[in-house]
Image: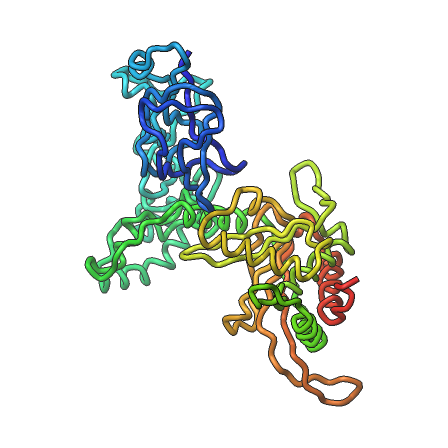
Length: 461
């Protein structure tokens, strides 16, 4: 019986990937465990192995194809004894990747006319739309009587207004918003030649404008700019995933922020001594070189160990209390970002963390990390101090419930015991998921982190 080779799900959240390269061709014999293709996800390039033996009868998805849906059939494998030509001629029941768009009913391709409404057990596909409109039936627009009267008095076409009431019903505040924007939008339109379609998008309520369903269309955005004065850089899968995850985080996680200043002088002195004591290898290089970021990772890991209720993730039915501190570390890569994870960081020495991070960061930049090396974790560290940034806030990366953002250490004047002195100060800003970590608990975690940074000998025992 022919065996379908499908696009694998290389992570729990993966929905599609790019089939970057085939390592076999039609007619090749393969055995279980043979590497047959390379799949590019948003974070890494992974090898796909054959799970059965047989002959590659048909390749359905050409290498270089982008946006291949998970579980789509990418090739057919003929088992021993089967006629390869017969197997290759068999049409699989799975949809081909480029057709899995969800924009039109599959029945339309068969020539069968689909009547509305759709069958009750089949969810009808969402019709494509360039801009949001109030819910309507035929030419009727749903609006309250008061909204209709005000719109008529002010000469506002209800068809250009996005309703914020139940089921998209237009209410008084929607008309007032459009009225207030009217003069400003008209002036900008006359000056910049803005398309009329932009006007209706500007009437979208702020609460809805942040979602993908009500965002400005590509044509509306480009309408603000003169053609020839820009170029388009197509989104790759990493950029799409970053946008999706950060939008998800900002819309679903109720975050709050805490900042603490940490004195680094004792840590900097200890770091100098540790690096000076590093053994020299046969290549005449030190066995390790501990960075400030390594201390930050260790301090966060130990703080989570000391405040275990903060070492958690959110699910709808329970909080997930983690037994170890798995700390993600933000690493900048060309036109993107990835967060490799130092597992059980609370149990590792500073030198071990240092060497592990060097390896993870190097392979991250070459997109050679495996999914288990950048997925999961319970918290994250983002450090922009090397760029001279003094302080900033980060967006929580689910399923984490916290992230600490650290800036540069700066010499500042401080008052100690009534006397003015200088110290190297670093600002650490924490973002917490309030569903998991309440204010007092977040303050305890931030305080534990500060204590380890200011008394770093505690990280060595």
